[in-house]
Length: 251
Length: 245
Image (cartoon, rainbow over all chains, first blue to last red; front, side, top):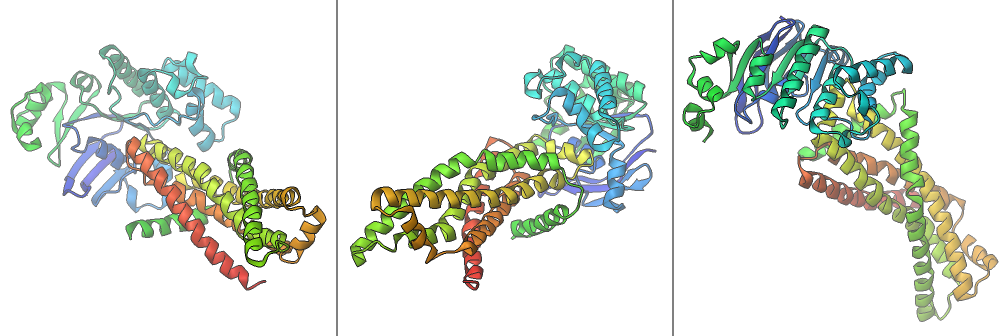
């Protein structure tokens, strides 16, 4: 087990969003979080990333309780993670190339030549070699996603968190992004946790699917197991039915 | 009350990081260029007009009350060195640099760039606040010094052109009221006001709520709070300095 949530509770004013939830993620596994908007998928990612502190419970990374560690130890542990943010979080004052070079300059002892070689490798891997000197606002949404992925992988993290990597993209670009995530996962042998509500991409990416709903995490399994899942909330969500328990609880 | 408590914690963290090397010299220099060099034209333009108004108004009222404006150079220099030069520069710096910083940090907050820094193990306070804090202290000091000197020069020029005082007469009149110590105190005020601007602006930037409205509100709040803080600090420093005259 590489990552785990143990009895985690967190809320933002109107009662708990997640109530004593548990989840274990094995090394090299790909987990996809699905579920209605606003019910805590991104919160789960941010808990793993150390960007949110739970009201109760433990965040375990490589067997260590993240919030029981000293700040420096936390930083060392979190450097093993990369994250693609929902809004990409690209540094808009830096060029495409410098966005990837930034973590390498800040957190490694590589020479500028070695950094530029690594930047070149990642730009090639995500198909952005031609855009190296452009700024993030000069490239398309799909290219920004790919740049975000490249930056998340720059420090060769063992764990990669993808927050809605295909949001707002056309089906072909979405497919390309999902293929890229799978390719990079194989290449770097990383553990991944992704958030998406695009079920085709969820089935493509996931070893296991987890649904976040009503403050719970429902582990639905792989594509076949998810499609056959007995919980009516899971069934309604994956089929996009307008009537069912989710509609009642959301209204 | 929560905001005050949060600001106190943030202030202590910022000060701790400020006194912890190593420093990002390149960032400090580029911020210093933005704070001082790029602000210089607007500050000099405004303090020059402030000098003209000070001379004209002082002369008008002195002639009205005591039928003599011989004390105008001294009073004007006193007003410029003890208040106008530092305070006008700081308030202009707040509207130019403070608003920019709050908007910059605020938009970084809402676009998750701050979270991205944290994910890379980079402390946003150390990365964003410390270089701006140091640059604004140095910038505030330099701008206050230059603004006071230019303001005095303009006052001298207007005195000669409209009131008929020669530069020599102006300087003699001025020396009766102020000395070098006043210029030192003015630059200390400038540096202190400069320190307030990035601390307040970045604080509101970090607390920025999402959306264009959130960034706008953070910017407005940072300018208002910085301006009020500068006026209050001006009172405090003036009171402290009054014990040295």
